[in-house]
Image (cartoon, rainbow, N blue to C red):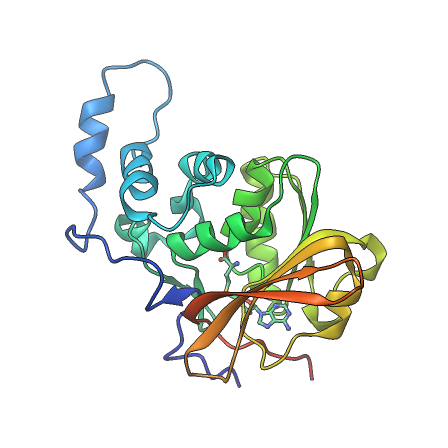
Length: 250
Ligand code: SAH
């Protein structure tokens, strides 16, 4: 039912430079060896993660976003088979034909939300839970909706295990989450062919909606909308992207 076999969630082909580095990260074992001299519990991926943020993410300068991405263990959100690629700048499969977004796209979208500690954000498309974790790490109050039940359950469990207090629910995010509205920002990580009006209706005055829009299986445009004082959406084009389709409950 989901036409996503060729689609990669949160990939890009413009706007973010390709890194000039090998496709695969240094083997985690290299880092483990370097860190075993300390007695504190170590994260074998820490060096990879720092490098990902410092070297790969070139389209972002928001310190809060960068700090969060330096901290959140992306490898906890990818399947074991892809652990060695967890800090490469590309999407990875997470099952059910879906993907965890490319880190540079996560960074770009997070920055565009213009949120900080205490702000309230709604995410449509929980997927692996990584984007939600980045926002939670920034001190944001996060609400996230996922249409595939198994992904919602897995992401919820990972977020909880890592100590991220994120409200996760299974459902069709088209209608937003009225009960917790208004939101300072809404982020949509799958691509619909139009802006879902309920998501606009649930924005606080001055709120931002970051969303890829375009046809299924083709290049889409990533938009950052801001709700102005007259209730109109002011649009900024953030470039061409390639997301999985925004699907609808039957
Ligand atoms: N933010 C995620 C990216 C996941 S890919 C991450 O960090 O890993 C996009 C996700 O959107 C997929 O898991 C897909 O199932 C979900 N999705 C698609 N349409 C949806 C809808 N109408 N409501 C909620 N989730 C949806």
